[in-house]
Length: 162
Ligand SMILES: Cc1cc2nc3c(=O)[nH]c(=O)nc-3n(C[C@H](O)[C@H](O)[C@H](O)COP(=O)(O)O)c2cc1C
Image (cartoon, rainbow, N blue to C red):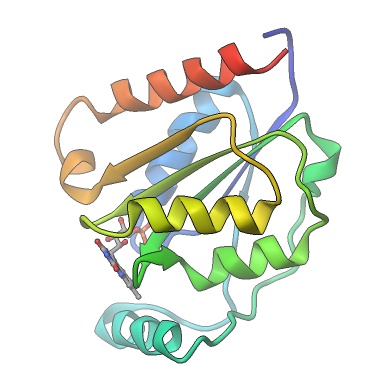
């Protein structure tokens, strides 16, 4: 893979997705867009509010993104799993940008469930198959060695792109 321009877009409520996003961005030298939801999702109230909003198919009101994926060769999008789906702020981000996205790759964080469906939903929202996918559980991220999974993900992306 020659020098490509890349953008990492993520939402993170409690820091897991952020940690993975920053590690990927560091390895590939990408610009980073942290999706910011206007609603406060802090604490237990934020957690249960999130579950309720997922159940009622609410949409998240997010700050206008600073970066446009069409300006980059590759966009890597990361979300926590919410109710076995893409988190509401990342759904809103997908809905705010032009589709299909240029080349993309996906990553997610989860306690344990929703991996397959969330990736499927990300593919539908982006309008194309990703070059690579990475799922990490909170348990994995809490232990040593998860960066190896990220390095493999980055390698897969490098091999897929011209
Ligand atoms: C509203 C909400 C719903 C969630 N739903 C699920 C779920 O369906 N399955 C699961 O395994 N984890 C679920 N989680 C846990 C998160 O996916 C997990 O802790 C993730 O790593 C959090 O990422 P973050 O720290 O970047 O916000 C949920 C968390 C929240 C806040």
